[in-house]
Image 1 (cartoon, rainbow, N blue to C red):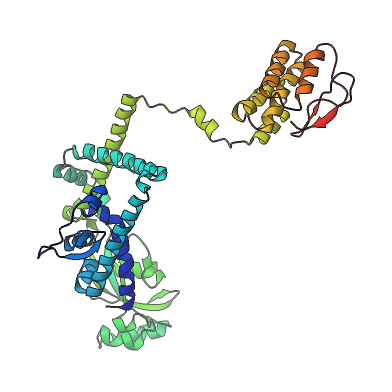
Image 2: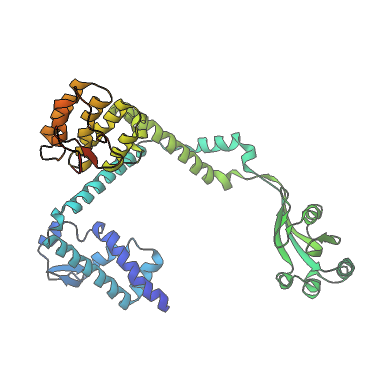
Length: 425
């Protein structure tokens, strides 16, 4: 056993225990903690560890290992040290589980929310699986029918496996052709070929295809491909020029263009058809559920939901920059409605009345707005300004320089006879 493998296995075991311990049939729920253990181990199921009076047995370890890859499982079972590590990990999980129960984690809101979310996900998963399982199996005849109806889809181009001897000059290539008349390819290739990667292996390049000009190890070489499909198996070519140099090629094997057999492609076809059927089934199922439960998607609300959420100050500033008074009032109302305790809401509430009075000359609406403002924010510094407006807005304009501001501070309106001051709400 290698050192790196031995080090990685405990990590694998820890992962296995985290994922599988809950479904291994050994420690699940409070019932595990409260059960009374038998301290007399069965001969076939010895107790390998004990945590808080609860025995951990061979069956517990086997349950965890059952879901491990065969190579990992065998290595644990063949190594007492690794088996002990796994037993320790399982015991540690039991300790963590008991400690969590003791600390009341099973009543923690975050834990319960996770459980609820997982329960919801599992319900959907099992509902869908059970519904899918109700479908009849895809018949073999459907797979064969698809194969017969799509002949060109399973056609294969011609393929030829080639070897080459690469030399730098045409004269050298002609010398190689002459040598091949009296010596075997395997004798000539390692002696003459300058392609050191393939020379000792008989110059093997691999397969070229009739639907392309690519040659493995050479690149784009239409002259080699064209020559290869003219040669019979075992024949060699005349010298061929490419950017790599001069080549003499030999054809080893030919596979003519044709249709793949049904046996070779039927599993691929079945997988494709089952995937398409599953997708169609899912669409049909969701359409039926949509009708049953009256699902509606509000596209206009989606547009609104995708807009960035403005802070109270940003929303107030947007209101101030809005040209139309009626639109500005709606934005001020939005600030008050959505952020009633923010200082921007205090200013926005005042500005509703101020806009009605100074820009729209709608004094009844302004009066109602100022009265609502005083009732909602009685301790604000702007109350004095609101009272001034209630008394004077129909008869005289505010003092010079008093009115809406470009900042979150606005100028308050003083009682009659006094000078204006600037204050925050």
